[in-house]
Amino acid sequence: MADEKQFDLRRALDANEIIPYFQPMVELRTGKLTGFEILARWRHPQRGIIHPDEFIPLAEQTDLIGQLTGNLLRSAFAAAAVIPPHLTLAANISLTQLTDRTLPHHIRNAAQQSNFPLDRLILEITESALLGNPELAYLIAHELKEQGSRLALDDFGIGYSSLRQLQALPFDEIKVDASFVRSMTFTRESRKIAAAIIGLGNSLGLLTVAEGIEDQNHADMLLWLGCDIGQGYLYGRAAPAEDLPATLAQRMPS
Ligand code: C2E
Ligand code: CA
Ligand code: CA
Ligand code: CA
Image 1 (tube, rainbow, N blue to C red):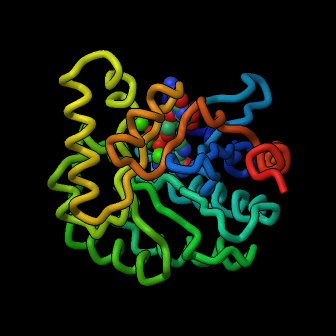
Image 2 (image 1 turned 135 degrees about the vertical axis):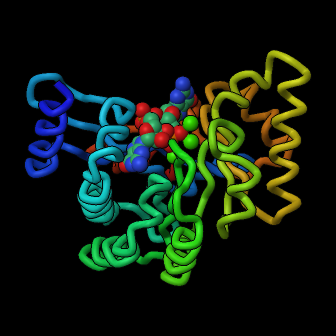
């Protein structure tokens, strides 16, 4: 069964069924669009749209993640031709990929094909496991930064995304996990934890980004706590490239 799924994913990659969706990111203070996060979707011929939780772990375990990321970035950079040049794209990179020496080269190649400048690319490092080779990850992280991209620590505060990682790699941003945003409006304790995370980010000189913002209450509170950037259903769900022009027209009326 697992083999069958792996075979199906391999076929999907070759058939270009893994496509980028784009979710708006906004500056909390002004509500202005700052860019989009690229989120993988599998457009399956029989099953319809499949979410990444169902195939990213398999891709990570089978080494298909490199090809998946490459395909996804190429499609996303091509689609970004309609995006104004001051907006950024944020891509998800599995922590294990930071020990792949070819990663910087593959990202550079994908960007060059569409003339997408690498200083408009943010790499969100997502962690599903502890890292085996932190020294190599450190070198590759630096190489990615030398190419011009920024690094964000994703899902900060949960799982393996910890204070230690913050020290280990040269991050520019932290993304406060949605679970803190969700619980923030319920208890004083959760609010204090969110405040501490954002305060930590600010005092380290990092850009702070909050995900999972679903209502104005969340947004107001995060702004008050000093959070810079927000993302969530309040501003827009992830949508396919075809929807980018409409989103841009709506969020950046000229
Ligand atoms: P993530 O990076 O934390 O992305 C945020 C997830 O929350 C996305 O789920 C997004 O659709 C969802 N979301 C956004 N706004 C809201 C909101 O207001 N409320 C709620 N309840 N949810 C919201 P999605 O697209 O299913 O992605 C799940 C995870 O899969 C991502 O979590 C990321 O860790 C991983 N992922 C997605 N694309 C890639 C990829 O290309 N490579 C890798 N390595 N991982 C990916
Ligand atoms: Ca992310
Ligand atoms: Ca996240
Ligand atoms: Ca998350």
